[in-house]
Image (tube, rainbow, N blue to C red):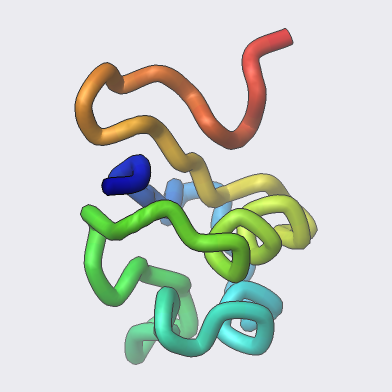
Length: 77
């Protein structure tokens, strides 16, 4: 069994560009305020979700390992 991730969107940072929805439509949606939200906060590790986080123009998406809370994205420096 693969890793499980916890996905969060910092709504105070999100600008509603929709890039995450275009990259991973199964993973993200925009609410009525045009802010991103994960469709499910706890998911199986997924390349599309990671690509969406990496492509967010304001880095509003964070991903951690569900078991340990260890950061997946953004990576620790």
